Length: 273
Image 1 (cartoon, rainbow, N blue to C red):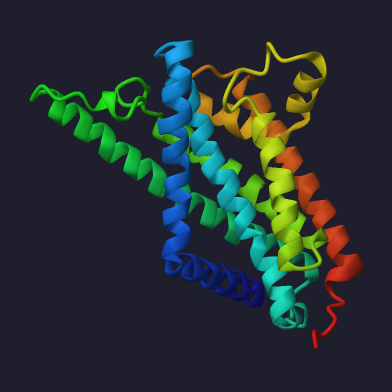
Image 2: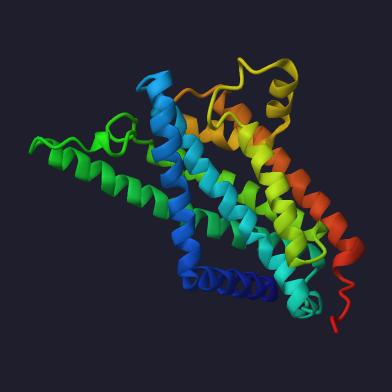
């Protein structure tokens, strides 16, 4: 038990330190959601009305979690290319612990990025109300300011934790199928955008055509976004307990498939010339 704890702690600390040293990665992770809120939110608000940003904000936070978790899974492909995976495979733990700890490390990366985004948004919101008293309205520059309910802390932590673990597991699942870092990058783009656009992050799923609505209901990221909507008290489409159950079940299934795939080829890592 002590060996397993030490293994988990070492891998998670290593991956977290690596993330915190990559300031360009963290900066890029913050620029993306701000641009979406600014450009997409501002443009769609002009068509859909001022309530659109309240719907968009949970989806953008979810997008940050999705990208953070998926990129966290890149470490699996990187360790395979660098040869580090040989050390992990020969460590005194079962192979499924490697995938579990990689998923948890990716979840921590997603949580860090979501936390930084929420901190930036919170500072902007506070600044908006502060300068509003002096007659300046920052919502003309940042259209989401002053139009969203700030979340329940308990629901926010619950939804972010479940969503981060699910997205981190999804990243690891993709990493087990990727043959190289380049292959993972192609696969990540192929997976992320359908998941995002069929999740209801930008628009409700109920009015979608039947086939698109069916895909959105089969999409685990849909329930990540829906839990975040519950946290932000904004346009949730499913019961919270139902979203928790579906998301938990999807995470378990993804981890099982990842373990199955890894047992087939993850332990056999050819040396690169």
